[in-house]
Image 1 (spheres, helix red, strand yellow):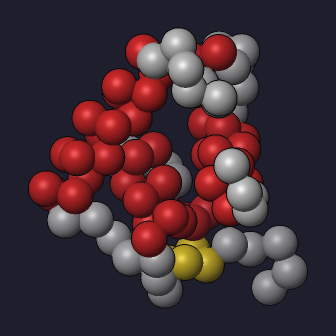
Image 2 (image 1 turned 90 degrees about the horizontal axis):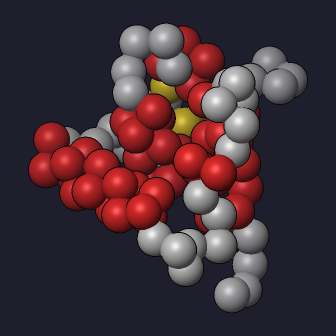
Length: 84
């Protein structure tokens, strides 16, 4: 099982082709699948962050050819880092 990412009982590799980027992000960050209201709130938050000029990391600043799972890994690592 080395190299596999399980969260909330789901293998992320299996989910990424069938659910949205935001759904996978929510699962990774919260350890459970999002309800519709939670997913809607996350989508609004991510949309606002993409437009913000003060966000330290912006998904739209990445190369358009970057794999979305690589983008998600980067965001997850940034969220997990300690301190401001």
